[in-house]
Image (cartoon, rainbow, N blue to C red; front, top):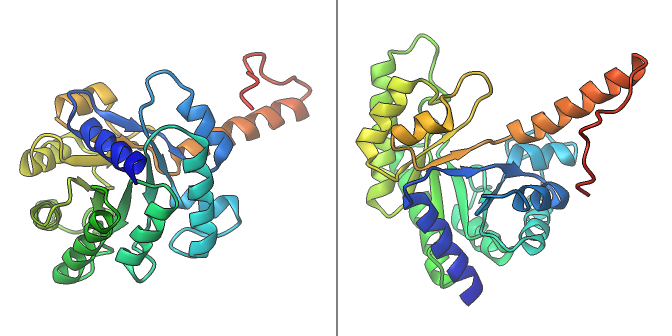
Amino acid sequence: MPDLADRARTLLDLHTAPEVLVLANVWDVVSARVVAGTDGVRALATASHSIAATFGYEDGEHIPLDVHLDMVSRIAAAVDLPVSMDMEAGYGDPGETARRAIEAGAVGGNLEDALRPLDDAVAAVEAVLAAGWDAGIGFVLNARTDALLRADAAADRTEVLTEAVRRGRAYLEVGAPVVFVPGAVDREEIAVLAEAFGPGRLSVIAIPGRSPSIRELRELRVARVSTGPNTQRVALTALQDAIAELLAGGSLPPSTRPLN
């Protein structure tokens, strides 16, 4: 798969470049084409939450894997950029899910650890990476730890961060190129994680009204910032606001562009 191998190398290089890799998560072909056609976009990532919502499913592997992969395949075929798939927790078989994601055209992906025992989580990371090498590509795994996301509100934050670092370092040690820590929105906590993992290793999600700016994240040496379901929420917010304006007697936004 020479083309996929090239795309995988490009995606990995984007993580280690001086600029933060900003990945706007997409959920269907038209959203992928609109994002890919935006100046400065170099790669795409899918959002499992958004794809599931598109088909009427809740997030969390409720959407059938075949349906999920079909949409990823359509997205990858519609653009000339590297595509990373949100594989959730791997649908019970992370290695096989990664193999099928690569067949669908993805050259990277997220994998949730769901706070499984660390040995099991590390084995899942290794299985995904092995699937990539078996397919002839360096699959760019965004190894996700849910240590912050699932932490109890009353938990000691130092202990929570320590667990995130422990898990993230374990994934890096077996070959994951980047660690994704959703729930990291505090500047000081992001700085701790970035220092612990090293430059070009930390991935975070942008949360509206809470996350630091891209400029700030670049200063903190964050490698990658994704948007998760929030890009779809931006689109749906604009849709609902436009309809409310029409129902109030107004008109559609004059800034609307024919992007499809």
